[in-house]
Length: 308
Image (cartoon, rainbow, N blue to C red; front, side):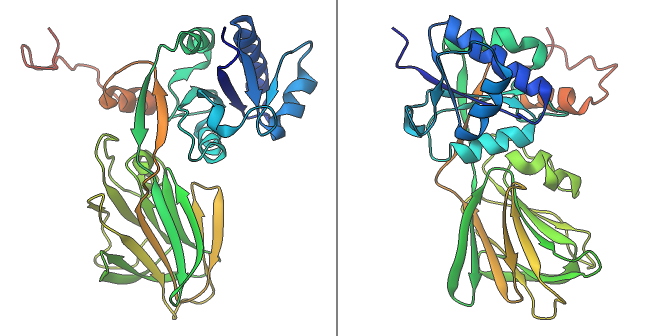
């Protein structure tokens, strides 16, 4: 019997392609003897677009977060970040099927959808853990907001015409103060997201580290920084800032930052688990997702990891 297996399907229901893919996945799971699980928000959209789609379980009603075996995510990286938020603290891995643009966190593409579900039904996948960030906002000595991020926590200016004045801190010690558009504090997973766009380095996800990348800094020393996973990063909004700042975590969770507010970022003890269908090197993922030119490469003959 497979009735005790619960697979959550998360889709970008605002896009018809994603909605259609969700219906296809649900039907394939039902044919495989499983009851698909949908969140409250997506249940109405999917059921309205589908015909004779049953049985379906409702998350939080007949199935709880802790009952999930795996989460199939249909969309781009934004949908995967939403699924990570929805299942925060759950041990079920996320398996992304890219229906967006780059889809860096996704494991397969739209044309592989049927085979992906076959692999899920057979439990034929690997699981890797990605470190996440613990984010805390302090005003004076009081913690006024706590959240987390998979990709990044970003301190940004709230007004386009105003510069944000900040001081950055590593492990409780001040490093530099400057005006800027913002500061990105990123995990290795987020190094290919906003941090990358801001000029930060690409960090292999197997490396535990924290990144700090200033956005458009007006300073002589405001270079991207990479520190160890046990370090603490902090950005303080200085009193000379005209206006306020704003904190964004993964582009989903936000908090206004008054002058004097401090945003402290550390490694979170709760990782996000991703399902993988292959053990291909991260280098190949970079090449494929960014369409990097490698024409003419022959490789060092006879060395480990090289061509035969």
